[in-house]
Structures are given as C-alpha cells and as structure tokens.
Length: 383
View 1: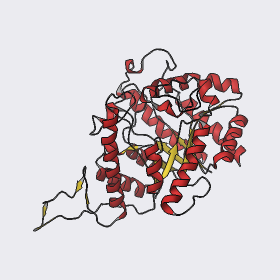
View 2: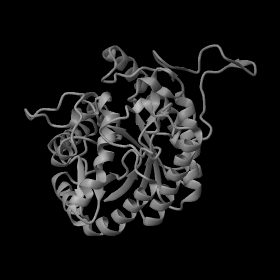
View 3: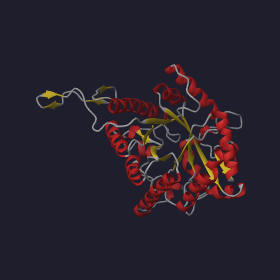
View 4: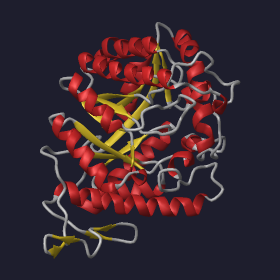
C-alpha cells in the first residue's frame, strides 16, 4: 500500500469550530500566510523523513480567510523536492481551467525533471467561483446560480486543456485546434516561414502519473477512459465501494484489461489519532466542524448518505458523529484507526491511500504530532 499525506495548508486558527465567526469575516496578513507556507514545507520534510510515499499540496487563490494559502503547488513542490530525498510530490489538484495549458505543461515538466521524476500530475476542474471567474473560467459550484452553464464551459475548457497538455508532454512536436484552444494560432511568422507545430521545452525525462478527482458521474466515465487514476474522497463507505467497482468496469470496457486490485484508484481518508476514542473526538471536533463550515457551501457533502439511503442533498453540514458513522472520518486510538483501514482494504483493495490528518485551524505542532503517530503507531499495524 502506497500511503501519502495531503494537506490543505492553511493558517493556524484560534477560533475554529461550528459557530462564529463567519469565514469571510476573518482576514490574515501576508506574514501569517507566509508563515503557514513555511510550515507546510516543514511538514513535507517530516513526511519524507518518516517514510511516507507521497506528499500532496493543493491550489487555491485569494483565500484571505486563511483556509488554503498555496496558489501554486508546482512551485512550492519544487522547493519541497530540493529539501527532500525520496518522497513523491503531488498536487490535489492543479485547477486546469485556471491555467494556460502550455504553461502548466512547462511548469510540471520542469518540476518533474528537477525532482528526479518524483512529480505527480494531479488535475481538477475547480470548486470556488471567486477563483475561477477571476482566472479565466467558471465553475458549477453549489452556490452558483448559473451552475449548469458554468459547468459546461468549465468542462469544455478542462477537456481541451488536458488534451493539449498530454500532446505537449508526450510528443516531440504537436498542434491542436479546438473550440477553446488553438495552438499554434494561424499565421505566426518565423524566420521566413510560418509556425505549424510547437515543441514543449522541457519535456519530462521520467514517466509520470495523472490523477483526477472522481466527484461526478461524468468524471467517473472520463477518468478511466483516459487511463488516469481516480481520487475518491468524502463519500459514504458504501458509495466508495460502488464507485470503486464502477471505475474498474469502465476501465476494462475502454482498455480491454482488468485493473489489478486497487490499481488506478486512490482513497483520501480524513483521520485523527489519539490515545483513546474519546480523546480523538475531542481533539478533532472543532477542526471537523470548521472544515464543513468552509466546504458545505460548495456542495461537498453530496457524497454523504441521506436518511433515505441516497446521496445527501448538497448543502448538508454533517456533524462529526455523522462523519464517523459514514466512515468518511476515522477517529480513535491507533488500533481503532488501523482496524478500520484494514477493513476498508478488505472491502475495496487499498493500494493507494492518501491521509488527510490536518483540519483547518490545527496548529502545525499538532499536525506534525499526527504525522509521527500515524507513521509510528498506525501504519505498522497494517503490515
């Protein structure tokens, strides 16, 4: 089992929890934001020393509330690569429609090469209208009244951009002419002629993986068709099993090959480890509630199971007890957490596990403590 760590990467909070303040009432200055960035890099170094397989950052913009303060995971990942020895470094996720696709391809290739092939190309379509519409796209967020039209534009941009990125990374030269992107544009003069193809400089020296969040029926079709890895997070455990199997079936239908146990699928698991279950519940409650205060308006809880056994309606703000019951959160002693991970492994085949041990507002001393406890007290029980 390849086990990695994923951090949202935010500012430490003294008032995390379900109640006030409203997130947008918070504002952190540039020194506090940069201090969080430095500590996020420190956590990557600790993960490398502890033997984790991978460390994943995320891309977000303009979040003065302090939730996610890394706008460029590739750039920060390059710093991490310079300070570490063997850990692989991924982005969960590069928000493709917010990038020029060729700049993303160039930056990833540079990062992947300088890290010695340790880069993981994580790609997504985005969540936050504030970011999307400022950076050249739209997004069908739950709180966006123009959701359907926004989502259609975003998906078209994403699909074409990913085709461009793969062409650029995998070929000596390429061209692409679509509805959104046109590379190279016609009529560019160059040394007595006209440009008909482009060549990405640099290109990857090493093989690379692509992973995308499997959050919708459309992506559950697209990702296996493209042959990438699918990332599953914040779903009721029975929904995970169902989608896990659907992913494998669709991969086989498109590629004529049965996936090996857990192949091309990655489970993200929120967790908190303390000496006892009661201690873990008390330790994680405020961070859990703050996370859902942050994510609920974007519709992330639609992976939970409602009272009727069907997916919950977007906008649900689950309690910690609901999250534990649905096994989207693993909370307890090292033995209890390891037992549930082992159960999940038996259920679906966990070859790729990504742990989410830091809740919004957690002090980085607590984050580092969790990294050590998981590595030294939980993972050995899974061998």
